[in-house]
Image (tube, rainbow, N blue to C red; front, top):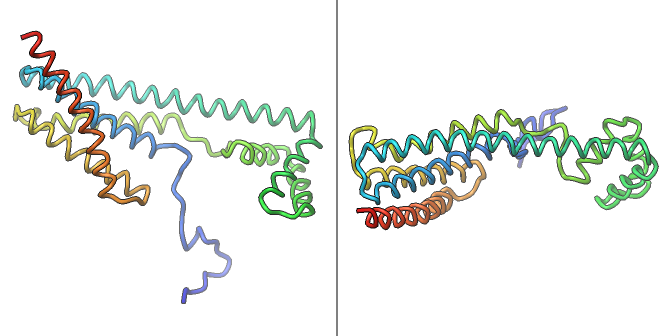
Length: 241
């Protein structure tokens, strides 16, 4: 039998908590790490498959790391910033509608509440109380109509920073054998594959999914990209030799 919760507490205080699912640092970090691993492991495979020396592989890998990290960071910043600005624009539209057609907007909220299961009487009372505060009314309308909370937008700086750091970490992994003096394409690919397994398992941990499945899935996706790039590198190397 479960013990009674402490008096005056809420479930989030003692029973469970929710992760941030607003699309902030975790999505950007996972995307950055995966992209860094796949991109540079495939790049190492392609350049190595062309038969170049170890110094060229390292140069190509470092260049891919720097270019990819900045590209990911700038892309994430722009993407999140644009998404936030779009939400702000919708807030302005909703605020204008509430000012111009307050009765129609309140009736719309009543319909929303009744669709959620409230009785019409309760829905009318709740909508009327909410509309006493214009700012709160805007927030409720935006949340109900768009499915987003305008007060909980992800940070563009956090998203871009997470993406930059995790892409860099992921991208350097397949270069580790070369940086340690082991000029072995097989070693680089093996380390990259291990990184893909670990990254897939870690991502699955955050989403409470099967770590084995997450690791295998990421390795499979990476292997497809690595195999294709290696084949291209090998064909190009044969063509220019």
